[in-house]
Length: 333
Length: 268
Image: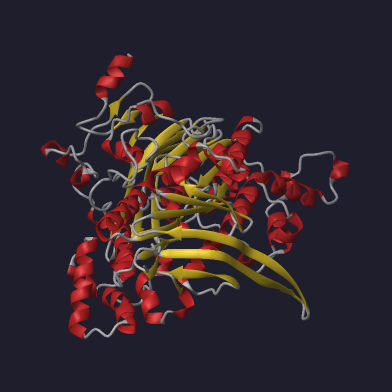
């Protein structure tokens, strides 16, 4: 077990009180696994990552029962101490690429600065200029051709997609034990998407890393993932291996996320309306009583006013009173 | 005689755009961003622009929306060059829908101001007429009219998307340009946005020009497709035909890369 978090809860400070954003959140990631968190925008994905890494100020209150990372028990440490331990072994790819680069320094300087001396693993006589070599190598792997120009440029001179690639290169060049990627391939063309996904795959296979892949779209990377956890309103509503979740989803929210992709649904003809859930995702200040999907769910009934219990399946679980596709699973048994 | 001849809604002939890449004081390098672009667009049709990053998709959109002026060739609307139109008329029938709603909508102004401003500048309507128009467009988009007096910060993401639509549709355009930020939205919002575009096309017979990279979405909504590479027009024609039987190198590569091993196909 690489990362083990039990009962994480996050509260955000408002003017009058604290707002509960996430409650009873468990996350367990095995060594060499690609785990993915999938949820619509505003479901608290990025907040959970920030809470895990300890990147928050006084406006956020985080409590957890148990936090373990590679045989180290970090439960009772302060945030600063925990951050110090995690920083050398975990790398993050943030959502807004250009915003997370320093606007005043050239790309090359920033990339070399992120390589600490503990990243060096080579013969001692290869020490001179090793940072330049590593940076050049990783940029070629990411798929940037004119490296000389890019390394000299400032972030505002590059396009958003190039900035994304540079952030990915920066994270991978440190060879972290755990890589957290927050929607890394959104807005890219299919050619560069494949390139980045291949890089992630080889990172997990060859250098024995672990990937936590956070995304809001099941389409482009669904076959890369090992386990899928569907997040809705700060709560995991369904979890399981990828074949199970995509081929027979039990929770209505998972079904709607799959239906939103025209290719996944064979019945959709040219220019037909795609079926989506009605209404908006609820705000955290006014979460509905009971099942959070309640008011938007097409199958909801009176029973859904209470919190649905966890129902276990073969390798996962879901939370719903009226699950879909139950006959399909019985057949496969 | 003249009536028998069919005039398309939008026609682009031999479009070209070059920029000067300046270095120091006297040196510059000329870069061709677009070269020899030809296409036509009929009423109620969808044209999708695809290509690699830096192939000139958004430059083409900028020319159609007219902040940029092409250096060669011309854009004809109903057989009349775009530059001969008055600004008021031009803005009336070509509008840009910016699906990056967080950055495209001014957070310091109320919704009423955001929707009223294009009407105030480009039409001779009185205050009552403008109010009526805004109420109508809000109803069409599916927002309550009480939302007029709130700031965009109070709205949810779904409502913001509807507001962006309302802003694009107040002038009742005949051509709607959609930028490629539509792909960055999450799956639910994206299909919501596509549904609204299809609705709009069905009811008002609007022509759409969309920037997209996702072949699966292109298959679903496109009538015609225009593939760009390095500013050159590589492939143009019926979308279904081109995607099922690609001939050009770049189209083949784009489709092959889309059908990669990391994309799962569910059994249905």
